[in-house]
Image 1 (spheres, helix red, strand yellow):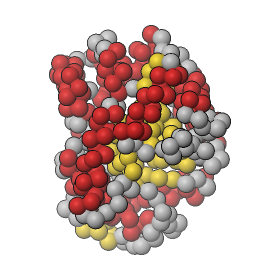
Image 2 (cartoon, one colour; image 1 turned 90 degrees about the vertical axis):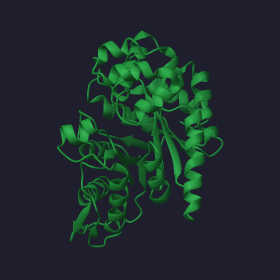
Image 3 (cartoon, helix red, strand yellow; image 1 turned 30 degrees about the horizontal axis):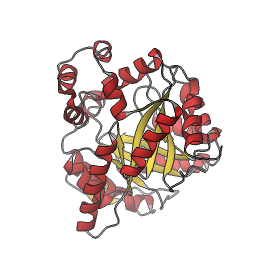
Image 4 (tube, one colour; image 1 turned 180 degrees about the vertical axis):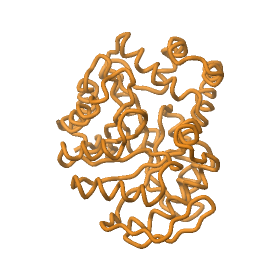
Length: 332
């Protein structure tokens, strides 16, 4: 059971800590289950392929819902995405959701040699192409940026929830019109409240039930220098990409963003990340302070808070996950 007292949800998120062993992802997943949470988000960066990792986690856990992604919408085609979800669900028996995002030009174009331009339009067309495929229909979609003809899943997954990582007005509009859920990362409660208002308005304008809103929040209980360094180092990954950089600039950290976009080394940037920035987009401090921060995100309009546990001083994230669930009244 992962419902907070007010009915909101708390879920686990696999972190991308580059200073920790890759295999810790499996340990974190088990701790998420032990903490009483029933869902875990499994993204992709430079460690494991997300589909392989989700299958390994689903094989080692029971009853843990898997949220695959956000995956870069420009990297995998609709048939590849549908086959990934169907394969994980069939091989593990787990319920699988799919999250999609624009990612960044570095990842989509630089790493994968795929076009990054027009991500909002590409997102809309991908979702439109995916819905019939998930339902078991043969694909026949001819969009401006997405095309697929003749593919059909052998094992349909008709009730897959599609989540969109939304930054900026164009992607927010697409999410409001087409997504079941929306996820934000490294934002303040005030940003969540603003996003909730915009999603509600855009969905209402097209006569649609607004998508649920999720937010990822890095968590460190009574952090020491190693934990703070870990949080700061990982945050530097997000300073330069479109959307994130503008958000951090609005919070008053435009000089830090400019340094990141000029190519300054991450190690040098991490030393310049102030505690104030960590406090604005993370939940750090005593168990009570962490719980209060989680509550602030729920009250701002987040139906789901995804806990990203710091593990520099807390291998597997056990203390962070236990503190969050205990403080929120979740039975473990």
